Image (cartoon, rainbow over all chains, first blue to last red; front, top):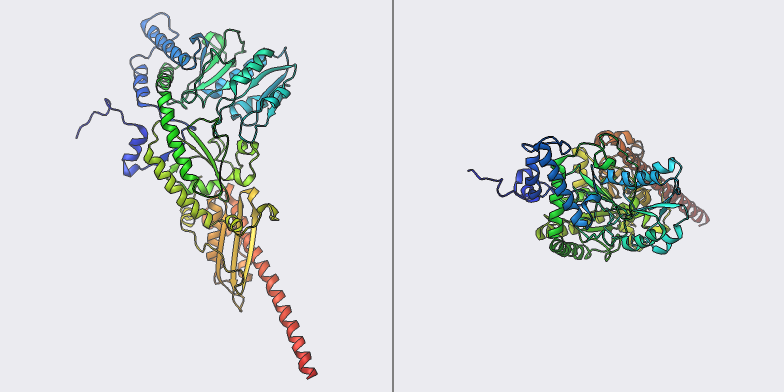
Length: 423
Length: 146
């Protein structure tokens, strides 16, 4: 039996399901990472083999063709977010983009002021550089979100100071999927001449991004959240009005001196193709995924004591983050081993701490401990959702039968009045 | 989290889940932990007249190893006297289940749950004994008066 699988690449999620021996859980963790779209893989491969040139080589055809591929990809990334290709700087991923944007801008504009603003619900790739800048003498305001996860513009305005030089607020939250009012914040920061950085790692291909109209100065992108390869990302650096950065990586002066290092042509080509597909297919894909997410939510809502974390309206259709009261998160994930989901964010799920994002929303410890993030994507199928709903209902029922807190709740005991023997 | 087969087995097939009736004879309850810490264990023992634990039940809110630890101790305490049960050490539980270092606190909680149930038993039993003694004294006095 010989079949040519190259001409018809199998969808990765389906491939895993069709082999009973290697049966893997249903993947509902697309915000952690996505499989590389088979169409993207196909475009990448030649740049690893016979088209292996260094895009910085100016003296022969190997270099010229690689440079052309890199510039085509740069144009594709720019097109998805409606900016000039010259404003895109390649990096190794959104973490590097965040570091370059935040530390680079703070260092460049340090003589203008020392105050920075961000939110408590940002990704660690933003919070940690902020902490580093605090050690260097900068002052940082960490805004609390509203209970729905969104920033309050009144509170944001109140936090601004005459010496504020940089604001960093993410487009789409990685844990709860809420969409921050980036356009409104941009109006405020531009009027005051404050640099505005947006981490858009979770936004590309999910919300329309129009940098010609958004008053955003710096924006971070990642390929692997949008069906591209891991290890490549980009930073948008506005040219009009021009934003300046201090480079964090020094070397051969690649990317106009902002980020030295040989460009990984195959990775960049992959990101370009992934972002091209995202641009072409976003509208139809989002509608399909929204229907599946709503179906999942409707199924889960049959259960008692289920709380959706984060605003449902200002939210990407891919995300559903819910707390199952009186059930602990890790046991919940074990109970759902047929589903690949996460409790809190992937970076923190190894620790015993509840999600800092849910804590910032004001969720109590029990609810923060009992949260599950379901994130849907391109290869999620209706039958996956049907299976998930059935499984969740059955397993939550089983865990609650085992939970002393559920028993007390059913007996009408207010758990807040109980004197716990804390350890 | 990579768990041992024993933890997985207890988690997937927990032993003795449930609660005894509130008014059942010889039942004592220990509840330890706090929701804020991510785990709460309720262990109930049913003790016969000879002070031997005849049966046990548990309910646990917590991670897989907390559930496994409490399931395991319901098996271990059965057939033991309350004194023997109270001497079970968390290290024995951790060893039996091969708990990873970050989950040692689950075994400590299970040991605490046994101790709390035994303390509850002693408190109730001692009260019952005192009441019986007081009743006998009253009856003796009445007999003497007759």
